[in-house]
Length: 513
Image 1 (cartoon, rainbow, N blue to C red):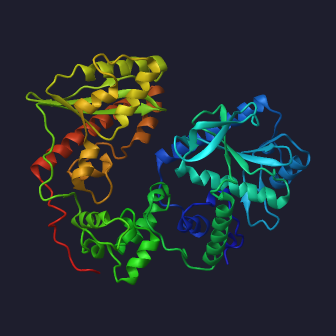
Image 2 (cartoon, rainbow, N blue to C red):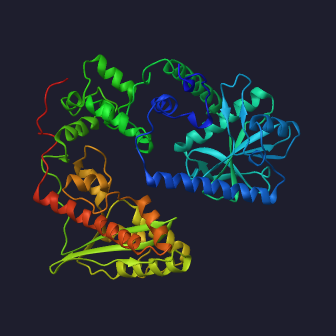
Image 3 (cartoon, rainbow, N blue to C red):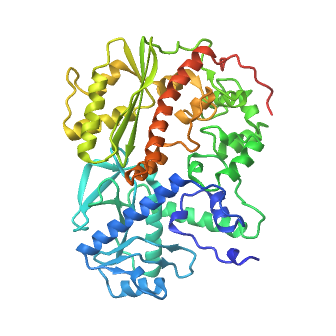
């Protein structure tokens, strides 16, 4: 047996993760199959964010940094806890049987034991979800309840990871009696967000259940020729280094989980009914009660068709205007630095961007002001097209931050409501897509391709950093990418006029299989 298969230990970031991926990470002999520069950049930013947070904590607290020492980090962490160090950075902890291991970013001494805190380079707060309390990082235990903020539900893995650390601390006898855990996150790095794990969500029990399942699957997988849990397609697959491996397997057998809202449980129920493929889903009536969401039938038909299908016999007419302006913005670290305007009228089509290559508060203020002025100056016969509400919302944030005026309008939201069309919403309301409704998905279905081989918002942020360093080619790449985004919107509208998709109601389907 290979040495990599001899020891099974559950890490904090394993909890809530795909069991098929965990098998590949532990046991597959080949390296992961996907290299993603943008996601690597996200990882690097996370490391940098954590490093900055740790350095700040060092400057205001008495700390023991395990990374500064040598020898066994697990033993060093136990020694620091026995010495009642007020704050331990970069600790390493594990249960007595070594089945659970953890690397909490921060361990803080409370009255009777240690509380874990994680640093996360994403936002964890919203207006709906679990209640939180907050404290300044310079006084972590001076907590106040924040009734206006809640913990984001889709960041549940953060809490499972922290619950995992609590379980280990309890096993080795160094946990605080309170089961409140903290996060220093991108919302406000000067504050710590606290969540009580002993509320009615029972996160500790959920973490224990996940850990038991992982141990069972990995122990069985250690002696198997492949993953013992069959893959199924879900949102997290997009960021998985093994996605191509699983995608090829799932597409080869027309696995029904490639359709949205169909998970492994529904897959098993359908299999019992003799429905094992996307073809079989497509053959079901549109009002079927066999699926959690009958819309999956429409998606299955679009998947077999290989393109868009109209939701009705005759879809709503494609929106047009005497003057059509396709609009898209680019941002860097939340700042708007480019607004692309593609204007189509009786004289033709022309691209004219507003740009800022500095990336400061002052330059963003000037850029957003120029964008807003151009929007408000559009003639009455013009209609603006955009993809999702991102452009509207980012402009609204900057307008509020800098106090920019919108003369004649109560807000930029009001202007967009009256003068603009969200092409993403219109497309989703009127057509069925085989693979989601992002611009990068819909435009190729309408015959449009980006000039860049690797287009995307995160890639454009990397290019912006390169142009800040004097790379003129990166600047051109950004402008071309932005121009292609707005030309993609125009291409979608023209395609849907010239080549109306067939109806999902009448598109021929085969028999159940």
